[in-house]
Length: 424
Image 1: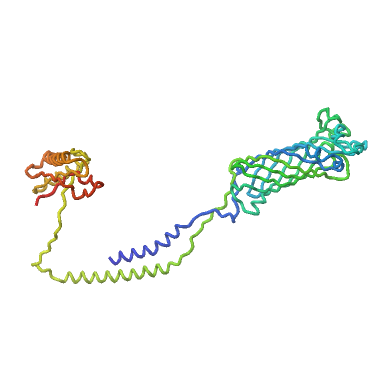
Image 2: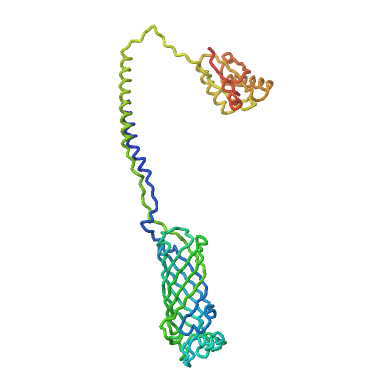
């Protein structure tokens, strides 16, 4: 007994640390950065449209409203490589409106005499121009919001700055009044030249507003620096071109990022008080065991008085109880198994038995319940006789009171039975 007690206490001491060890949790740790997604994840398409205004040397001679209402559109496909860094490439269309010097040397590619009504009073010194730029462009994207505030899946607003470069092919109308067709070639010699193709650098702020997991609303504020020679030789090498666009983004595949998973251990708890308490309990148990062993040895040495008879008095319960459904007197298959088991016991004994039929008084009426009591007890007697039990050993009676276990209506099913007892 002492060894078992010691073993149990030892198990308790070592089990507590083991249980604490199982409480280690594994969580994502954003401080460790984010894991690169698969190549097919985090792709997107941007579709944008808006207006821009060309700001070359002579454009101040034209009304701002006439220049500003020049349409432009972009179509990009891109990918985010991390929550901070991404790229996009695509095509752009821009219609340029402005003014150039009317000095007889028509260097601009889109000179238009039909735009004179848009000039100021000194229209004789300038001519209007209108041409289209179509080209390819690419940007490097940097998410400022994720950089400053930390990455958060599902954030409604993100501010993205970008910078890039583009190349364009410029198409002009071959008639000064704009009634001709759009062509791609130089103004001066009728051939493709420096006036037909140029480069630009751009930067901007892309504002994204989440409309869903895969769809964003875009507000793109952009500033381009375009090579001068599309606008004739002037006083500047580069022309400014600010623009504003609205659009939508559609994101493909997985749109979120996962941080590395690290274990988080529970806080250390000093188990010294618990261990000391267990040691005290162990000492008390050992003292109790020693006292019991001494008492046992004392009992063994004492002689038992032969004149003293030890009698165990108890009230014997029923040998078996057969239960019935409400209002029924037939023996169900399950209860017949009990009858079969009782018959085997009776075959190995010489006792006589008292069988009592019961019916609860919480349901039905006296006429029904009296009949149920007789039918139930007589049915069990007949079943036992069929099993080979002598009927002279079986005494049948009924009890019109409620069974002791049927104390109330909820317990009424316990009073629908036949009890079998050995006769004293």
